[in-house]
Figure 1 (cartoon, rainbow, N blue to C red):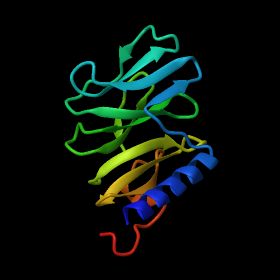
Figure 2: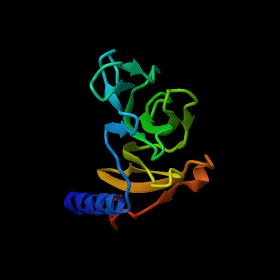
Figure 3: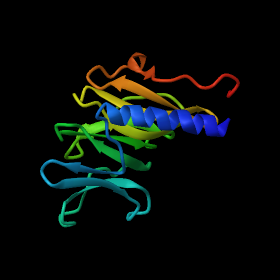
Figure 4: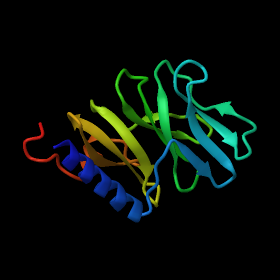
Length: 159
């Protein structure tokens, strides 16, 4: 069952990659900037630095952990996962760290955050069924939980 879940997740990521979506914990910005996560201050936060490693500045400083930054295609926003509200939630903030907005209110671990090529949607995976991460997509322009859509269903009998 775990192998089947892993295989479905891999297929979803390949499909997402083929559509031009990107994800990762270090995302390059067109202006030679890199967003990354680090626990250098005791808990994971998101930082921005120049491509040569200079000019490191913190973008987040919340009581929870912030991780998995992903730039929007235009480089103006960063989607990320945060536990600032107790459980993993997806947020979007401006590339300078301002105006963080929560996109999700659901329970479960989240991973693999990425923007769509047009920057209007964010995709991620969420573990709502034990050991099975389902890919989801949500609209960034209309922050509403009702816009959260699964891209796949858990296998029968996996609950």
